[in-house]
Image (spheres, rainbow, N blue to C red):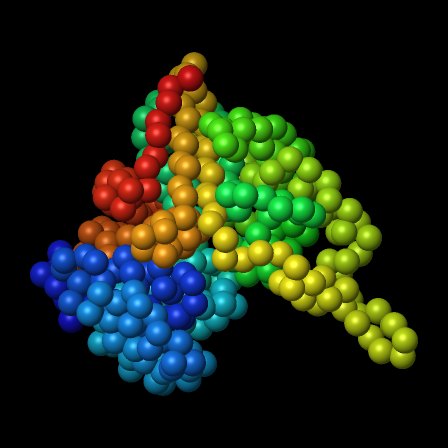
Length: 387
């Protein structure tokens, strides 16, 4: 295994979870020249085998692994320079603890503020072990955090940060003009939990699915809408408190989506409290989640839209990304813009390119210039415009 704290000649990476994002990660990692091997582990061994065969580029090793088996997980981690978690976010704290015990670097796709806070609380233990624990490394939160860190270096006095992100079907269909590009439970959480932002120099919480605004993208997308949702700011409010007056995150959708979905929220269809119905007790949220999975498309060509705007020094700067389904590689835009950024962070940790050890949000430790170059190498193109 490569020595920590210096750039390695060859590295070995462990990817936990052989779902869509695990597939994207294995595809990216096995195409890096200094990656000797990628172990892709999943409770369903046959799923790991499929990902290794389809995306592994001859370097992937499938493994059947129950991530709740702590001793086995620690043993497997020890043979790798970095671990990337693509499993359910609720497992990430225990996996981070296992990585510290194994003295192995760890990153994940995040998805829940409470879990991320628990991981960051492991900072002292991670520093003593000489490893990195970096949560929330997907799209948003994730890549957008590093975009903010990158732009912040270009202002003497940054005042505002406005992040807008959406994963969408290229050809929207009624009734919601949306397709499931990630977990339906994660989608509902985004829509019902409160959003954390900086307003007037203070951290405040806002109701999700509010403050709808319009924004324009090049055709064929044109006019889109964006509205408050939870989770997208992650640790940015704490990192930039006292440095900016305004910082927020909104989700991009096709026009009309917010009003339609908010009606379901207002009717109580996202409630987890079981209700009596014909002698049974049914949680409306479970029924809604099942209906969304049954009725919304999931695997049609998609697009990811990102717009981050900054203001300061009397100037405005905008970063735009329009990333589309890669038909040749069979990778969705969401896989590219979620799994690839996390894979970049995993590689940086394995190569010893992250100077600071400990449990840290990536906007505080990932070298932004290096990260931006890695995105460009993967043809995730960030277009910069001074307004």
